[in-house]
Picture (spheres, rainbow, N blue to C red):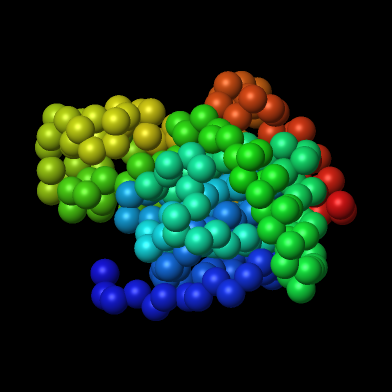
Length: 254
């Protein structure tokens, strides 16, 4: 990757992103708390991607290159912290749980970035005490380094609902099935079926955020029935796709 633009974080921000609007690769000298109060963000780094709905935020350590893309009309709020402020000791982007209190704190900080310095400092101090990692597996899709595996994952990302076997994908990229299977385990910590299942569920989040019905999202992601999709979604994210859509609508209205 070429030298990245460094974007200074001069204070709290709030911006509206259109559906599929993308903020290209960059980094910051500061730590950043990134929160989509409505819509959904996919945050990408060289190590993988994180899906961030309104019930979650992401901590972006200083100097970590990243890009992000919105799905659905997305309101993005950011809070910057000095590089020596890192209460959880995080060195990689990490998805955080957002309690009702943390949500209100972030909104208060970003709604009025000109708030008196002492008051702003107090709000940020309380927000830091509320930071809590969410289960990483649910929201992280590892990105492999091997070129053959990257070609496979690119093919799958173009059509997450595809039922092509690993052997078929291997023929497309010039690698054997056993080699690719071994590489998936070594480079992502997942088997090929696990990685593809995670990709499909992440893709379903973007489709639901874009307004698709549960049935349409299930078909697009390769599930045989809406009930199979609902079961997999609930097992991973702890809620049903229907409830997730309602939560998104509530976040937009809030």
